[in-house]
Image (cartoon, rainbow, N blue to C red; front, side):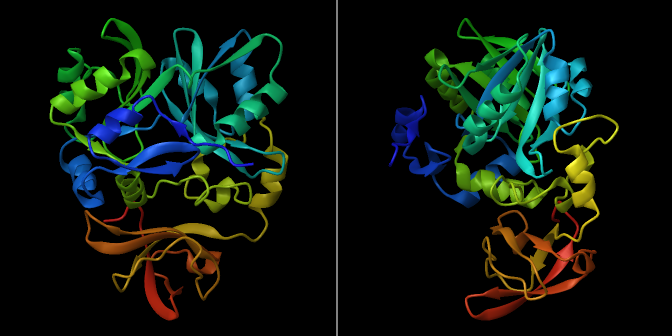
Amino acid sequence: MVTESIKTILFDTHLKQNARMIEFAGYQLPIWYTSLKDEHVSVRQDAGVFDISHMGLFIIKGNNSLNFLQELSCNNVGKSLSGTMIYSMFLNSQGFVLDDVMHGFYNDQFYLITNGSNQFKLKGWMLKHCPEDVEILHLNKNHCFLAVQGPKAVTKLSAASQTDLSDIKRFGIREISLHNQTCTAFRTGYTGEDGFELMIPNEIASSVWNDIISEGVTPCGLAARDSLRIEKGFPLYGHELSEIIHPFMTQHSWVVKFDKDFIGKDALIKQKNLPHLINVGLELDSRQIARQDYKILEGGYISSGTISPSLDKSIALAFVPKEYASIGSRVHISIRNKTIQATVVKVPFS
């Protein structure tokens, strides 16, 4: 059965601004407006805005909500009680990654942000484990989600919102008023730059988007979002994360806190001690792009690759055997019947 992809509330706005649209995570979203390079550079040097309404938006509340989330999350959710967003992962009972998520606590309730392709899977997972005194609210039908990112993002978004946002701490949360409606601002992002992610009622989404654009913020699509996150070594579900990948295969095993209980803990302890591939950064000797699933002759495979617009070279994230995971190791990638050499380098790329 083929299901029609979802159009975000900003779909017509994107078309009016000449966006090229594609299907991603079950949604129709811009891949770019002008070009990947222009939009990427705008975020690194100035400010860009993304429609990320495909991402799952949840509120978790109730007397037992902290204990509930502690059971699901391998990181310590208690760290969010200071009004801070924290990065974590939900694991299955075998210790593999169901999704990577962001937790936050504000106004006596928890916020949970998930990947778009996993929002319904995680909703089902939460409902399966949810105690009676916890309520789960799924906000996507009534809200859009925008990311404003870049070194000038805070200044330009403050101007667009007529609200000084500079005093919100990094990874902090605050409710703000836009067009007489309550919105939630998270000082987070997935580009490696400063900025905000905004949860906005659908009724004012187009007005807020246009306000942001009017301050000289560049509209950006998924292509730039992908190249920006690869440069910083951030994982993407389905590439660096999946239900055949556990946290100790990733570059973000620091999220695992074994001093508390969580689903998958015992299995993960066993997985950690078994032989496994490790995700690393690669810099290629040529400008050919190493795409997902290209084989590494020493073992392993490419998980993501691009020509970095900022660094002007071919970079990739890859899973390799432990003996090839140290900085400076050389590996060989099979790219369209050619063998291309690459070096394991420190991530973020530079």
